[in-house]
Image (cartoon, rainbow, N blue to C red):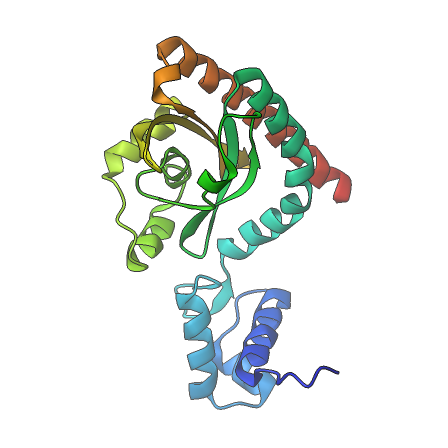
Amino acid sequence: MTGTKVLTTARKMLEIVDAVGFSTGPVSVAELADRFGWSRGAMHQYLHTAKEAGWFVQDDAGRYHLSHHVSVLARMRSAQADIAEILQPRMRQLAADLGEAVSFAVLDQGGLFIVERAEPVGIYQRQKFQTSISITTSASGKAIVAHLSERERDRLRAGGVELAPAEVYAEVADRGFALVRSDWLGSDITAVAVPLMVRGHCMGALSVIAPAVRVDETVVAEMTRRLLEMARNASGELIAEERTHG
């Protein structure tokens, strides 16, 4: 025992999520209130909160069931255990082949973070390594947002993220990669990013970032080709791991 106080409201919410998840079908406020011995008003508050957070969905009769977000989360948790092991050797090899930094970024709680990175020796100094990057202006951000649902984009906007016009993301989704030329940490850079898709869900974005002076259209094409190849192979391996784990 650590003596840390348990948050009763949080525990109750998790119990409700379990109850809805293990039900054989959508459940009403009244059913859940009776099951827990609560008032309908109290139960409705919990259910409404979970719905607003994206965990529950209501049907036409007002009954609740788990949202698609829960299945996405389950797939992500299953895959995350394998992502680092699968991506790291590929990223190191690509960084060595291209002579440029390779990163993997994920969207989490309304922010975009680099969680894996491979660097060729002598190209980027460690003090220039940034873990949090812009959802709006970065190539990784564009590659990920291009594959979000409108509901997911609305949640980002509600959190204060200013997204690009829809046609920008439509173009990225159509061509399969995002290309950004900009100033990054005081240097002119070119960045190419592609989504890592697993069963239709974007797990994150793989990117190559290089000083603009070293990049022409031929180099951009090679970066893009290699990233798409890596994302495709990694996705296939992650799906195979899912099947192995049952």
